Length: 387
Image 1 (cartoon, rainbow, N blue to C red):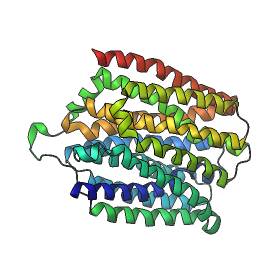
Image 2 (cartoon, rainbow, N blue to C red; image 1 turned 180 degrees about the vertical axis):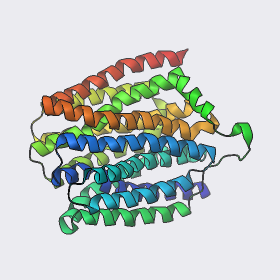
Image 3 (cartoon, helix red, strand yellow; image 1 turned 45 degrees about the vertical axis):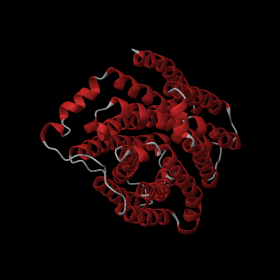
Image 4 (cartoon, rainbow, N blue to C red; image 1 turned 180 degrees about the horizontal axis):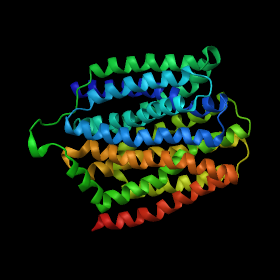
C-alpha cells in the first residue's frame, strides 16, 4: 500500500514538474528569436545550455551516489532552475552574456532534474523500478499540457507570465517531494562509497562506452528535432501556437509507449527496441527535410511514439544493468551528460553553421544519417552482449 502511495506521488511530481519544464524548454527558441538573436547566436546560447547539462549532470549524479541521497539534490536543482528560468524571461532585450548564463542554468537543470528523478525511481525498490516507464508517461502528459498552456499564458501575460508560472510550479513540486521517500541505500562507510575510480571503471567499460556513443548519435537527431525543426517551422511562418501544437503532439504521442514500456522491455529484446527507434528517427528526418508544410511537420511529429520514449526507457534499463550498485545514479547521469549534454553542445553550433551556409533541409538530412549509423552500431553492441 505504501509503495502504491509513493507511485501516485511520483506521478503527481512528474506531471507538475514536466509542466514547469515545458514552460522553459519549448519557449527558449521563440523567446530568443523574438528579442532578435539570429540562428548562429541562438546556437551559441543553446550550447551554453549543453555545457551546463554536462557539468551539472556529472556533479549531481556523483554527489547523489557519494552522499546516498537524490531527494536533497532534486530540491536544490528545482530551486536553481526556477530562479534561472525566471531571470531568463525577465529581460526581454538582447544581453548576450546574461541570457547565456540564464539559459545555461535553466536548461541544464531541466535535463539534470529529469535524469535525477528517473535515477530516484530506479534506486528506490523493485516495485517502482518496474513502473518507471508508466510513471514517465505522466511526465509526457505534463509536458503536453504545458505546451498547450504556455502560448496562452504568453499571449495574456507576456514572457514574464512564463517565469512566474515556473516559480509557482517548482514550489508545488518541492511540496510533493516532501512526502516521497529518499533512495533506499545502505549507509556503510569506506569502500562502498562512490569514488573517482568508479567513474574510471565506467569509462573503460567497452559495452557501456559503446552504448553511450550510440545514444549520443541518436540524441543528436532528437536535439535537431527540438532546434532545427522549430527553426524550419519559423522560416515557414509558424506561430507560437503552431509550435506549441508540435510540442504537444510529440508529448501526447509518447504516452502509449511509456504506458506499455514495461511490457515492451519484458517481452522484446532491448537491442531490437533501440533499432526500431533508430529506424524511426532516420525515416522521420528524411521526411522532415523533404516537407515544406507546417501542418506536415506537425503530423510528422507523430513519429515521436517510436523515437525518444523507446530510446530513453531502453537506455535506462541497459545502463542500470551495466553499473554497480553504488554507481547507479552516476551511471545514469554520466551517460546522460554525454549523450544528451554533448549532443546539446555540438548540435546547435554545427546545425546553426550548416543551416547558415547551406540550408535547413541539409541539416535535417545529416541528422537522418547519424541515426542510420547508430542503427549499424547497435548490431555490434548486440553481438558484444551475447558473449
